[in-house]
Length: 58
View 1: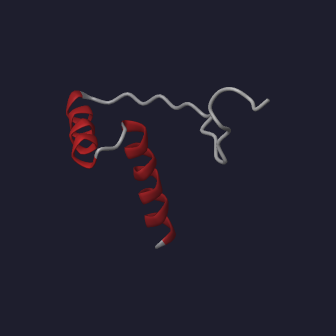
View 2: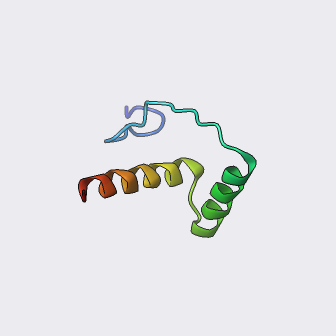
View 3: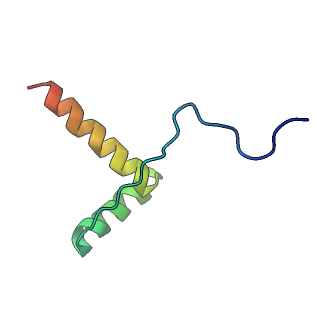
């Protein structure tokens, strides 16, 4: 009998981070997410990747 439920991920996202944003930053994030059809979490992950890439270029 096969296991029930969602399949296991190769890269589970088990760490939770909370960020406080002002109204302008939150609106900008929502607008970006709506335009690119991604979640807020994915937009933040992409932002972190951009920061790390820019840091490697120095």
